[in-house]
Figure 1 (tube, helix red, strand yellow):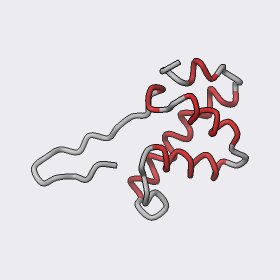
Figure 2 (cartoon, rainbow, N blue to C red):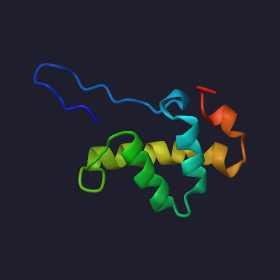
Figure 3 (cartoon, rainbow, N blue to C red):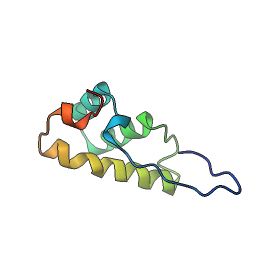
Figure 4 (cartoon, rainbow, N blue to C red):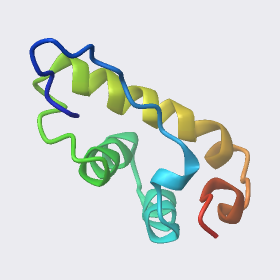
Length: 84
């Protein structure tokens, strides 16, 4: 998550399918627990302090739940990953 500079308004980033590579999506699908998926998302999106920083934690949860619909409904990874 980018640091907030003085004088600049913070604009949160929203997860879009092009943020994930096909390999990222495959790794996410292979994850065994929700905690594994959250750790993987945090790593992919460079949110190093997500367990201690409430802002980063909220982003990881948002990204996690954003992915739940396509994963639980067995949507083809080609449609989850916008770069395919």
